[in-house]
Length: 231
Image 1 (tube, helix red, strand yellow):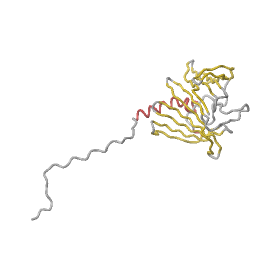
Image 2 (cartoon, rainbow, N blue to C red; image 1 turned 180 degrees about the vertical axis):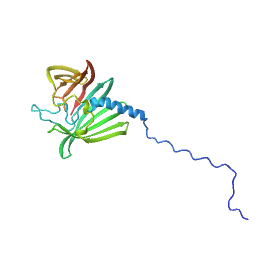
Image 3 (cartoon, helix red, strand yellow; image 1 turned 90 degrees about the vertical axis):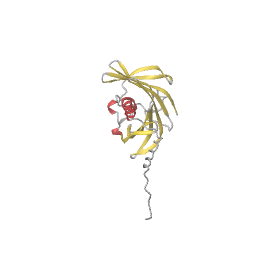
Image 4 (spheres, rainbow, N blue to C red; image 1 turned 90 degrees about the horizontal axis):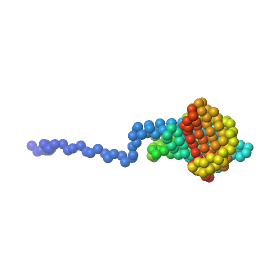
């Protein structure tokens, strides 16, 4: 009888090697969670410090208090809280209609060694309210958290010490910060267990803030200093 198939006693071939690992950098879960915690700790106090349902800082311009913005304006700050430092930049990206309202589009970026938090705000200068917000937390080039919603749902409200009331005017002071020396108006406002001190110079775009400090039970727990500005 003619043999159609030849049986081999040789062992079966080894399984194919596993596919090579992806070249895309993977970030450990603990690192990502750690960055989120840092953002929430500092971010709750500073990242969203400017923005809730209403902007607490004296953004605007002109003696009559009419807000004024120009595309390309920007400010940079060094923010320190609980032994951690971040750099924060706020820029006027342009003007857009959001939810039927003509808005100023402000982009705030916080840079950290492991990543950055990007907060985009659509702000109505006539009502003084945030119409819409969007946040992105990035580790390297990877977005690990993203949220957005109407202004009333903006995170970090519980950390806001300001409303539209800047507190008590304390006079003029010369303040030295990384951006230089500035002649400022000083205001103080009482908050639970302490006070907030803010130094204002109307030549600074967007925020008008040169320096801000929060003091709780005699300890300085938050500092924000102007690093640079332009536009």
